[in-house]
Length: 314
Image (cartoon, rainbow, N blue to C red; front, side, top):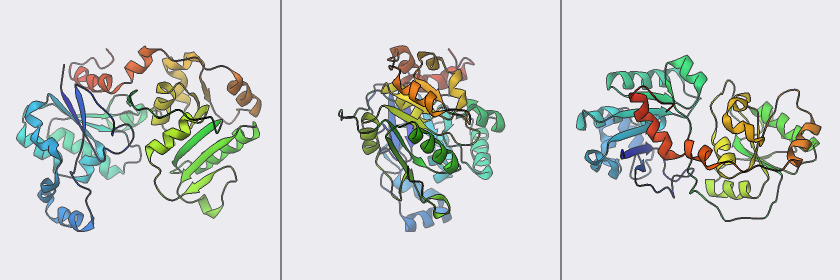
């Protein structure tokens, strides 16, 4: 099987810290966190960034493929040229799981992919169609676990408000009106300084492990999609891998095979509190292992090579 190296911004995020696999490794771009003086010098002399590269730079000769998430590529504008210069035949794929990229950032990723013969992917099909990327799903690792905790809430939401503050507030109000106990946290200030009584606003980053405790302490996960989003978020993955009900504003989820299990409620302008109550009262049906295998990290990396063969859906 292929040995794949995935370069990310921070290996302390999401399921990365405890990830172990015989075929896939997640590595941090820089060995140590960079600070303003280093970042300033790096802008003037981009090659200076290489002094702080992680140990991945010594492993390029032992791998079959490298996947670069979009943030590292945008952080270090010479990253792709460095790898290609050392490994002319190594398959390189750039993967974007960020929908909030500026037009200039999208253009840079496309230029890098074309110049250095890289695959270019996104987890969101509408983003792919607009920008000429190929599609590959988001991924998750079932080995990322958390100690079981007692149920403290019916539904949990955690996220930045981004362009969806109104949608988040509307979802919170609807679920509250259905009599559910909410654990709704928005990272950032309340829009226009007006706080919603059903939402807690925090300024600092909440560690993923802390968030997982809230997930395990709830019955359902709330997923509020960004405007125009079709791709499945980490919230969707968590609901599948942790066998939680999902309440989402992403109507595209209704097209997914796992929707047939009946564990997903799609919120729209017509959803009523009684529909929410009926959904929450239904028993959860455990997902099959086949669904989880499809979204596993190993299957995700495998689809990059299948894309090179013209058969990403195999």
